[in-house]
Image (tube, rainbow, N blue to C red):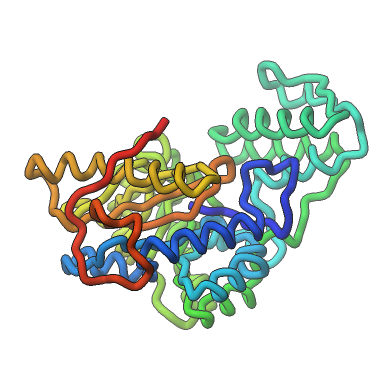
Length: 353
């Protein structure tokens, strides 16, 4: 699950892909995989016709650089991607984590007095160096992530106030950019309206989040939207059975989690797993993906899964690599892009941490 593709490397986002790194990644996946639109891949999985080495690229949240930076690179490589949009921050909004990050990054102060947050271990914070700013950004994000929404928003506003930095208004996609992505042949899906942790909400609030997001996107695109990516996306703390049922009731046909693993014909289409290879070298990248697939091959050999497999590979802001749906066999590494004859059977082995 990619989030952003930066125009240039950023020392305060050291694990985020920049344009050069994303271009390199696209060349890897184009050479070794058959890149499909997400809607087509899910449909072909259901039909049992998924080609060997099928892969889908996806982005979560809806950052403006998805259109400005990532789209031209995807087009240059002839690749498709799916973009999951948080509709409540379209046209000048800002994600809570970016309020924090931009406040710490852009403050003119060398110290921030954050005692008002009333959080353990957070008080007078030095931000005199880039490393101190990065460390504080990471600590604050982890500290407020699972707070109730109102308290999380208040904490972010307090950090911005102390830092004397206004929230950015140009980070997220505009409605015009969403339409442009769709007209360029990209898939558009929902990432809810305000990016809450759905499992923490009451049923009526979950419905509101899903319906508002879906209806907003359908009005923008004049097309049906039936793909969903759950915010945060871990089964248990972030997603539960209520979320799945309510998402189906709201008209979604497929949904992605952020749980590692592979999916097969028996996998629930509302709980498609994802996997994160975070390596920057080509060899380590493909070996880590292969190792993840190998876990599915073990299940297949035991008669627990259909040989035609689907894997979703995800990367978040800390571990940024393309999101994929992947089926492959032992001969996948040397195969060129475009070979769709062979079916997925078993996986190559590799190393993973």
